[in-house]
Every structure is written in C-alpha cells, then in structure tokens.
Length: 390
Figure 1 (cartoon, rainbow, N blue to C red):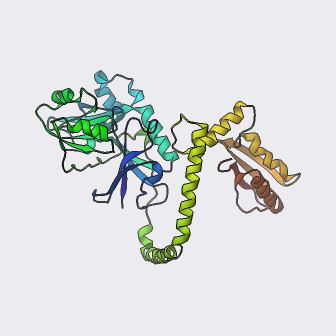
Figure 2 (figure 1 turned 45 degrees about the horizontal axis):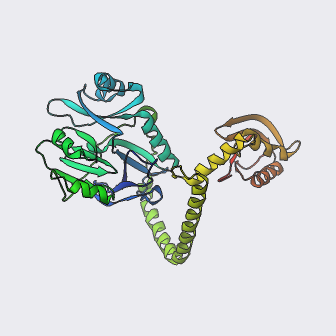
Figure 3 (figure 1 turned 45 degrees about the vertical axis):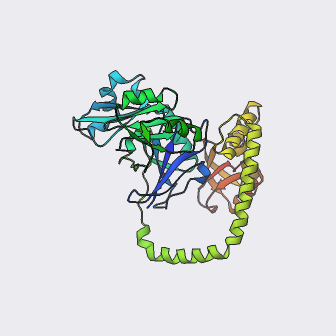
C-alpha cells in the first residue's frame, strides 16, 4: 500500500495553493515526489472504503520544538501531561496548543516535543477533509529527519540537528543564525519546492551544501492528531478475501480502459476547460480569496449573500420544506421533522404515488432526495438536501 505525505508550509493555503508531497511505498521508499495543487496530488492505492489517507509534515514558523523530560508512554504522550511539563516554556495557554511527542527519547531521557497552535491545525484538518482526504498523522517536518540537514520550503529553512530542530527565516540574517544554532557544522541543503531566488541565496552560504538528499521518514503514531482532531477509525480491510475476483475485474477494467481511451481523453480536455472556466469566474467574484475548492466556496458565498438580502438559501429549512407542500393532502402522514446542518430528515408514511411526486418536486428544485422505496403500510424515512451548486 502506498502513502501520501503532504508538506504544508505556514502560508498554505492563504498565500499559495501548491505544496510539496511525497508518495511512499509500504517500505517507506519514495516512489514519486513533486509540488502541486490539491487537484494534482496523487491518490494512494486504496486499502479500504472511505476517503484516501494522507500524512502531514508541517514546515515553517507554525511549529516549534522543545526538549523536556516526560513519563514513559502512554502517560507521557498525553497532551495534559506534556502541557504541564512545558508550562514554563509556553507562550500561550495549553488549551490553545497541540503537542506531538517524538517516539525516540534522547540518551539523557528527554523527549523532543513539537508545539503548534490548535486553531491552525484544526483549520488544516477541516480543509483537507472537505477536499476529500483523511489525515491520519501530523508531525513537524523537523521530526522526519535524523540527519543534520536544512530543508527549504517557502521562505523558511528547517534546520535539523542531532537532538532538535528549528525553523529559520530565509533572510539576510540566516547565516548568523546558523552559526548560533549549529556551530561549526555543515548541513545538507534540500529544497522541497521551486524557488530559484531563495535557492540562489542559500547556495551562497558556505555552511550549506547540496548533494544526495537524506530520506524523510514520518514518525509512527498520529503526532498532533489527538482528541477532537484524532483520525476516524477506518473499516477493516476485507479485500484480500476477494483477490482472485479483484484480479479478474482488473483485467476487464484494463480492457475497457483501452477501448475507451479516446473518449477519456476527450472528457479530460472538457474537464480542464471547465476547471479553467470555474477558476475565472471565482477570480472575478472573489479576487482576493485563496482558491482551494472554488465550487464549494462560491456555493457558500451565494448562500451567504441570499441570506444577507433576506432571501432563502438552497439549504434553509423553508426552502427544503417547500418540497413537501407539493405532495398534496393525504400523500404523506408526517411523524417527525429534523433539520440539521442544511439537511431535512422526514419520518412518516409515504404512499408509492406520493414518493414519485416527491422525487419530481425535489428534482424541479435541484434538491437531493435520499429515500428507500415507498411502502404505504410501513413508516419510512427520507432526507432532503440542497443539490450540488444550488
């Protein structure tokens, strides 16, 4: 099974949409790497149902490192225990921070702890889930290397030494900081993204040298993702029981792919044209906003504007409930209505004819209807929600 690792700088996605990524195999070897926007991130091989998994390495000044003595795990990995041990070193309230404890303590018994703002981390996890990804772990970039090195990403340089790491700005004072944090030490320089001007400045610093990049290895465990940010449990993988049938299906799929290659190329061209059109419309409406998922962002913008003008948004209660009014008298014997998060769940007895009328009414209002087959003798439940782009 392959694993996708995203390296997120401090200015993602506010000032930039692209970020470096690494695609590893099950043994941790890098199969592919690049720097691109979410639409071009490679999806790892599926191992179970649900959204594809990814791991995060956080770069830049959004993370900090501290060394502290902690009890043995699992007690020593609890956020409240870590916060108590770091109390004198923290500039913010522990409740506003997230902690990641490296699983390999130093010879003196101290542990390396990464610290970052909980609000920033929560916003990243929420955005990635909205984009269809399931973050399984999040660690500081400096914890993914055990070699004295310097990792350039954006306008920040992550300097990794034998027992800690520090994020430094790639400015005129960088050479002086390197003398302070890594005296008399030559560091391997690795550029994770393309920035010719930055790399030219870094190559002029004698303490930095280029060569074969050392490997990046994400630590085991979930890192920062504890409590409300913990990854959801993924269902057990039963695919191995159906491997023969899967191979047969793969053969048919390969044949079908060869037959429909021309049609696929045509659809891909149409999709590129559509994405370009969507991006142009988004920039015309919101020229200053960070464009991550333009369709969803514009849908939310339209709903907000309609509410501000005193009109109903597509996912408001009255807009969804109006569909029930098309059923007429006797079509629905209502038991319960539940409206939550833009979805209207209805419980009651629905005749077969009323079910057909309900589907027609929902389609005319560009609403999504989720309902089982109607049975006039049995109570049923169905859900109405706003349709895509409505």
